[in-house]
Image (cartoon, rainbow, N blue to C red; front, side, top):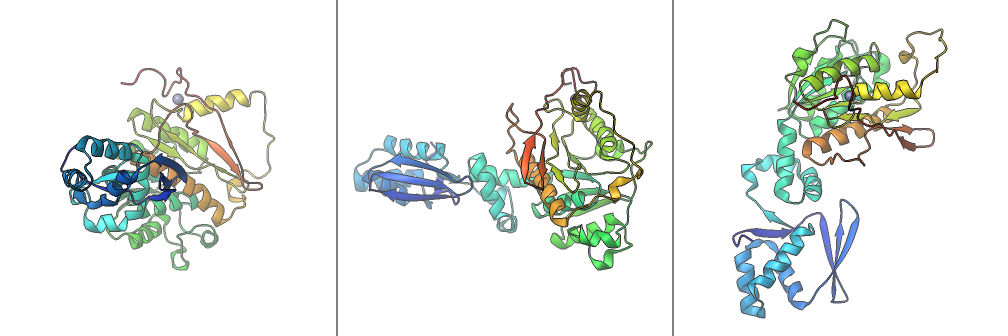
Length: 369
Ligand SMILES: [Zn+2]
């Protein structure tokens, strides 16, 4: 243990003394509770961990006043750090400015809780600020995702959409205002994003997705890609975008698939780690074998679907949370990680699809280069 380190009790942890024999810890972010057997000396030591004393000063204090040796102080501090009760204080100015620390303090606190130390929380925030994100589609979902990412500190964002703001969009899109009707969606959204954070760099691409669209030129410049484009339809745009992202090894999120009765929890796709869009297509092909849809008299039904702004926001918030968690390093991809689910608004039931990565997938299968 470095004797010059200064520790403090984490802001996200409440400590209580119970019966003079137990320290009860309540973790505010996870609602976890833990109890630790204690004694009078340990309580006296904890009282000194206030963010102003070095480990060396704590050791001297405990030796001089309570006859406690330095190994015992080390043991208690290491135990408390391992259990995420205390965190070393680092010079945060080297990672973030004072203004950035203040602006994002609540979420840095959240990141720190799951990552371990406050320093890791600062680095997670820095990662978000340095990530260049490309969003396909500025409809209700894409616009909400963009808004939440900029609120979280994303500073470089590219918006792709050809459409203009229509009157009915005002009731479904959280960020469109009366004066935006008739304006291109990308420029209206850019204006809103810069009202949230005037330092955000917003690059706009005012075009639609066509079979000959060269999306590669945009994708290869991004660190993370989000697809919410539902024209001509989400399956087409996702396949085209995901194939390109896999080629450039860029993680991406499919956040479309929303309509009046359900919200897809999307899927986070990490090339060669999680299933890709083609793996999902293979899964659905197998599941729907022999099923033939009846022809519907209305061809372009996406414009007929009902929905509420609150439903879009719900779906987009789910996506934004997962994207932020992934960039900040909070997503642990394991067998248990649930990549795609569907929430039914009628009864708020959430079901997950158990889709596995296909090792023979023509897009993401085979060895990682
Ligand atoms: Zn695949």
